[in-house]
Amino acid sequence: MSYGQSDSISHYQNLAKQHKKNIPLAIEYLNKAMEISIQNKQDSLYLNSISRKSTLFGNSKDYKNAIEQATFLNVEANQLNDIFHIARSHDKLGRYYSKTGDLTLAVSNYLQAIRPYKTIKDSLKLSYVFEKIANIQNDLGDFLGAEKSALEGLKYAKHNPKGNSAWLYNCLGRASKEQFQFDEALSWYDRGISSTNNQKIIVSLIQNQAVVLMKQQKYNEARKLLTALLQESEVKNSTYLTSRILDNLGYANFKIGEPNALTELLEAYALRQKDDDKTGLFASTIHLTEYYQAKDREKSLEFAKDAFNLSKIINSPEAQIEALSYLIALETPENTKLAALSSLHLRDSIAIATSKQRTEYLKFKYKTDEISLENSLLLTEKAQQETIIAEEKIKKYIIGFISFILFITIIALYYILRERYKKQRLKERIATQQHFSKRIHDELASDIFNIMAQMEQANIPVDYVDALENIYERTRDINRETISIITNEDFSTTLSNLIEGYLSENERLILNGINEVDWTKISEENKQHLKRILQELMTNMKKHSKASLVAISFKERQTSLQINYADNGIGVILNDQNKGHGMANMENRIISINGTCIFESEPNNGFTCVWTIPLK
Image (cartoon, rainbow, N blue to C red; front, side, top):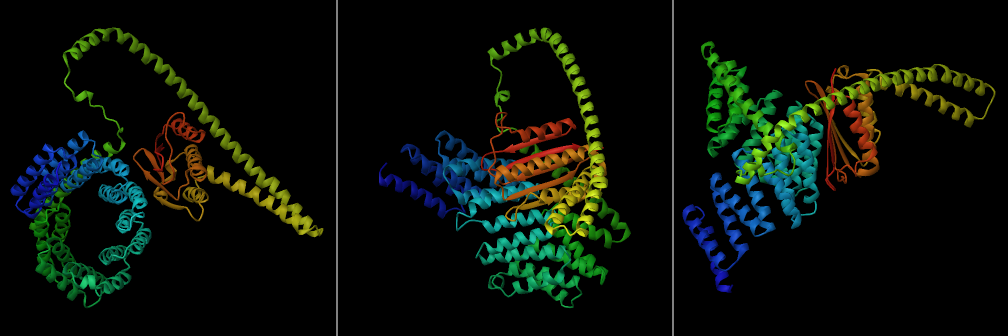
């Protein structure tokens, strides 16, 4: 292709850019650029023009056409084996599906963008993709997943001076905040602030810190941060930032009884009215509703009505529920019933939508990577004939099936009886351990103590006495350790100490939910299995994984206790040949008590284990 032809393609692309507000005209220019690209076999420029069409629709918020063009880009890029545009198409689809609220499809496409971005070694794009995934996981309540994605993104952001480390730390801060780990959240925000020189990002992170402090009811500390922010040039030059900070500052001052609180709240309200910031106005009206609630009921009701109207304008069901909650408290009795019914209807709608979205996400998360497309194809004539033959064979299979079921029943009965015997043997071993540990403490330790006393009186060298005292302390430790396993005495502390004992000062632990578990619902046998499984995992982490971060969470379900383990170590290829003795032990333990387990790992992508233990 000549220079003039290449220049002609660029000419039409530039014309499309100049007329981007006139979508039909811009699309016409890009179609012309595509025609010339096809004629001259300029594949990259052809794909670039499709990408530009998708961007045009996306920028005008026509997400239906944006998705259509991004999908077309993906098909064409795959046919031409253009890795860059394959990655770009999935990246675009992730963004547009996120805009339309199809979060599962958004995550799916972002994940599909990772491999091609790795192939072309685009660390900047990888860090942004992981940030988007982490944000969506936070939205869906998958906070452990969000933490894992954000930490993965940080690996790539640190290699690029233009990376988004600060926003990835912000994702980690949000995940911690939503799990009520407020001090942890503040720490992540601090690290985000230290990772960037961008004043606008720093202001945003400090505001997030102030919000966390207010959730902790540390209003004076929040007030100091917000007051200092108002002096920043980045804030002074932005009415949006000024109004947001003033509103939060006024609310903090209101909570501690400062007289200037109303002035700040009203000033923020006026700025947002001037900017026509509907979302910001909703926040201001809610704060003013709360401010006047105990001082001027009529004024409070007036702001609550304004807040409800704004919530409908910004089309936020959650905001409508918040406004209705104030209307229920402030309205006259005859109007309260209507507000309450509206609130109940909205809550049900949100609950159904959220449940549906999270269910779709969970199905996607745990499905296999390879999806067969054979079932979606129409049966050919040959396939229909094979189906007829297969139906004729069904009668023969019925007898075999019944025999198979009988065989399985016998095997199952055998395993049930065997497991019952194993459990009985385990109980006997536990009782024996307790008996011998008590004898060690009551008899052996007592005798050692008496000998120590005699040695001191006989002027035996101190080194010998110290050595004997060490043996005495170890006998007591054996007794304490055995009792801590068998009894229900502060089992949370026992597990916490066990886990933390494996960590060095360079290894970080995120431990969630352990103190919320009702350990009386876990049998003594299952407690011992749980302890041994955690020992296997931590031993593997210490010896093999080279992890610097370990996250363990406990969640009590209706009939089981779910434990999630994840680390950022070197990972492993999971298969029957590569499965070590420790992992096999864990599987056998979990299966023996009717639990379930899922292992997930890839080289350089850490190790994840999710397992359940039945409750009593």
